[in-house]
Image (cartoon, rainbow, N blue to C red; front, side, top):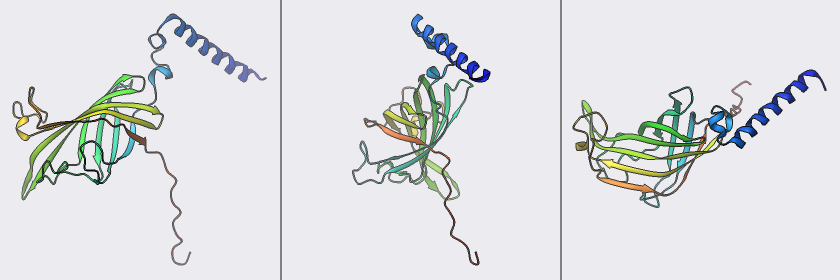
Length: 213
C-alpha cells in the first residue's frame, strides 16, 4: 500500500469518526452544518414535469408539460428564484377565464425547510390581448406548496394549493401581488404528488448522411 492510499484512508477514517461523535453528542448538522448529509442534494438547475389531468381538471384534459428553472440566491443554497413555464398553457384556466389568451409563465421563490425539503410560492397572470395595447389582466394565480428532493435528479412536489384572484385584488398598492386581506375568487387544493426530473445532458442523435456523403 503506497503513502497516498494510506493518507486517503486516514482522512476517511477521521471524517467518519468526527461524524459519529457529532451524532453521539446530539445534532450533527449543528456541529457540521455544511456537511453533505446536512445540506442535501442540490435543487438548482433545469427541471421538467408532465402533469396529467388532476384535481379539478377535466379527466380528458391534455397533460400539462412544465419546464422550470431554479437559481440559488445565496451561497448556502437556502433561497432560490423559481421560474415555471408551460409548453402548452391553458390560459383560460379550465374555462374559468374564457376570454384569457395570454399567460403561461409563473415566477416565485423556494425556501429551504430541511436538508432536502423546500416551500415555494409562484405568481402568474392571465390576460386578454388588446390591439395596439398591453393585454388586459383578467386574473392572478398564486400557487404554493412543498418540494422534496428524492434523489440528485428527482423531486416530488406536494401539498399544492392554487388561488385565483380577480384584477381588483391588486389595487392598494398596485404592486403585482394580491392586496393584504384580499379574498381569492377560487382556492383549490391539489392532493396529488407530482414528480419532476432534472434535465440532464442527453446524447445527440446521429444525423442522416446528406447528399453525396
